[in-house]
Amino acid sequence: MNGPTPRHRSAPEKKPKPPSINGNSPNSVVTKHKDYSDMKKSSSSSAKNFCSCLVNAHFLKWRANDIWGVVRHHPVPCVFAASLLFFMAVEYTLRMVPPTSPPFDLGFIATTNLHRLLESRPTLNTILAGLNTVFVGMQTTYILWTWLMEGRPRATISALFMFTCRGILGYVTQLPLPEGFLGSGADFPVGNVSFFLFYSGHVAASIIASLDMKRMKRWELSYTFDILNVLQVIRLLSTRGHYTIDLAVGIGAGILFDSLAGKYEDSKKREASLVSSATNYGSYYNSQKERNGELVG
Image (tube, rainbow, N blue to C red; front, side, top):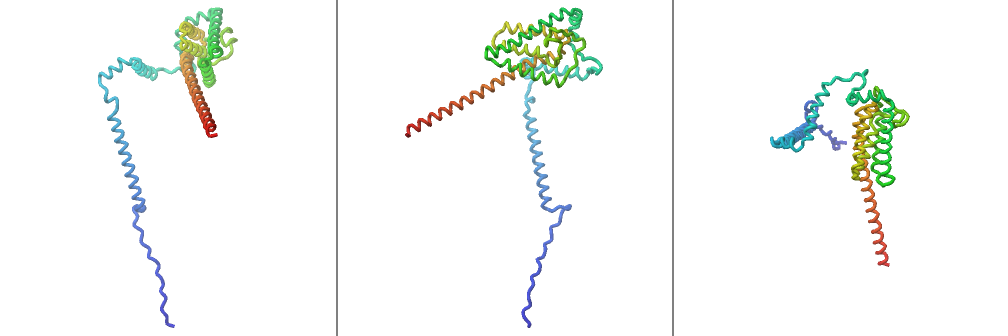
């Protein structure tokens, strides 16, 4: 039979892919060009921002009168700036102390004669050590008195902060005992026991007590503690009981931890006031709710 011949669909012709450029498709090339242009725009904008900041820099507006005004009205920062340059020159030209030599301590040099005196008179050394121990007892008594008797825990909290930090730092870096150390059984801690050198708890506790006295306007007592603290520093240097850096950091530690204890107290007071406000609001809300319920009933 001669029927109509079946028609077969021809396979769709494949369109040729667009030619690639350097092995990449045109879409990827466009994307790369777009990314490059974005990076170029961002870099140019950042450069413009930097230039605008540089043009508006504060120091470009300074005049000769402004510089003279800084020196005139702010002499202390200017002295610190000069000290920075001076000690940079000293530090970078100083001959380092070799490992086999004892540490260089200017406080030891300044108290050489007192050291020889106490070394030749052990009884005098013991008497001064005992008096120093009495002064440590005065510090401890006052700090505990402010908390237990007056209800002001700031000095006690400060001392706890200070001695905790001293214990950590003293154990982490255990300095060698200074050469020529003159110990005494009457010194605190009593009995010639071991102790941390860095930093001086004697000096720091005295500073904490003195600052509390100044806050309470106990001026005579605070000045007495300051004078005794100076004598304590001289004695500790003379007996080689502490390096100078131990005593200097002890002063700074007393000031620092007194400030931190004050901030701790303020934070606790704020928390207590917030809790009190929330409690008062809650009780007021409940009373209003009960009153509304009674009115409805």
